[in-house]
Image (cartoon, rainbow, N blue to C red; front, side, top):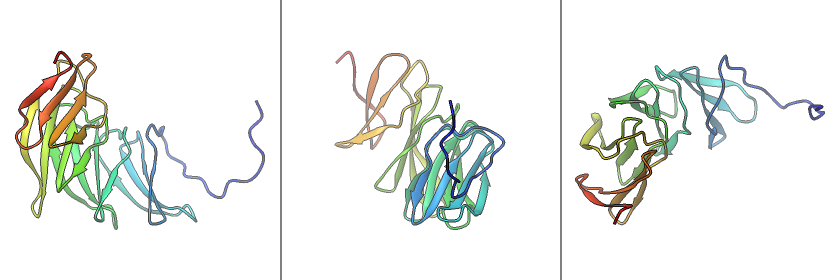
Length: 177
């Protein structure tokens, strides 16, 4: 087929694919890339403002809260990044790849990994601090956790949906009832 006619306003060339949607906040486009990078790009001009090396492929859209970005990578890490300059403010090591985006609610980051673990990390002045970690699934969790009524809900490749108490990670119920 013939590509559409016209001239692009700007392009961003990366050396690997982009698997997740970019995030647009205050005229800055945050672009996660499989080349281990998170790019901050001026949305009008295409100028790269900064690049952060996240040590592994980035497969999810970052989450923006109060001037900070939260995103995981296949380096088995969850990152807290300054949206202003790309400085990695904090990182937390997980048991396996972080494929999906985290849920950020009330100064807590809820994230899951491909080994079936779910993590509750508190956002503190000293960085991301583990509140609890639970292996709930026998297979990977790719999707973003859902936080609802003091519960964290995750869906796994093992065909189950798990409900956890957001405060301490204990199981509330699963898809078997």
